[in-house]
Image 1 (tube, rainbow, N blue to C red):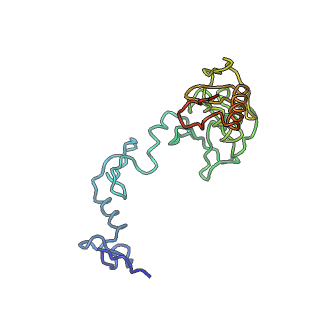
Image 2 (image 1 turned 180 degrees about the vertical axis):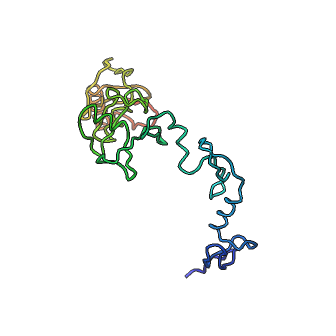
Image 3 (image 1 turned 45 degrees about the vertical axis):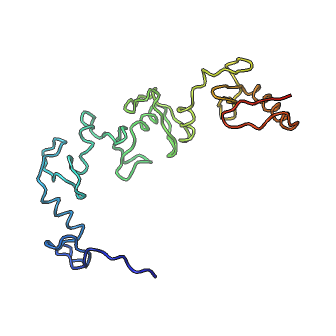
Length: 229
């Protein structure tokens, strides 16, 4: 058993919470939690930046500068929205609908999910994802929304690399075969040198055959194949 680490604070009964705990302020005889609360109450009062007119301490319970009252941070963004709607911290519009099947404990549902269900007359599953085609999170028109079965499908479809500028270095075609997920298959044999599915399979077949006959040196990263014979 290792000895307990020595603390520079002695233990005593806190004058505020009456707990036997480490005392951080000897003069006030306060523990760490009560000392933070004391500093927050002693800080000068400032009006909430939301414009509600309430006076709040200029620091929070951790001693950091504070401009908004707790829960008022997103009200400035939500101004101008209809009643029952608010703006989330991620830029999405929330709607108050406690009767919805998949509403949160506070009765909040994403507005774009409600718009998609109303436009397409369907019920979305909890793990489905609704995508904004134009990239504007506040444009919740039915024609601007597209649903995906899962987030993985959403990531593959919306963040897929643009391969329109790739050409096969052998046959010169711009088209190649696709896999089961609908993604085009390209082989990068060297830096920005691409082969289509057909030419790539033939290239690697000849490469394996040459290695088997010991007529090719092993490849290193960043080097072109050197065929001898």
